Image (cartoon, rainbow, N blue to C red):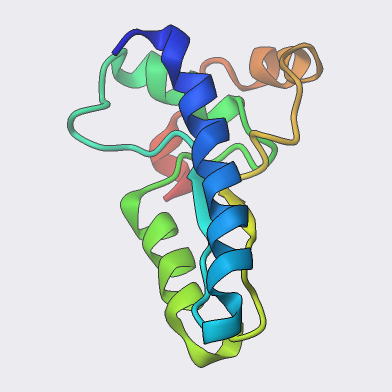
Length: 120
């Protein structure tokens, strides 16, 4: 699948989340959608240290996420404490969806040369 289908497919899943939450809510079935940011994985480790710095600089917290960051959000949504949450689209991305590319450029320049290993 080319990158042209990526955005529309994400939008479709978010719309499906809302529709299923509406349809299944009366049966007390909760449906939510997680929107993960750039996570450090062996598969996605292209770009080396510079790529990791750029991914960290592209979010509001300046941190690179791991699979655990996403897992904690999943665990919360599976807990009784989230029993009143349904139809939600939850970004788990250190603020990446909040930031605009142009707004982040100065921050990205400031962080060039910093080592991401100090953040973990």
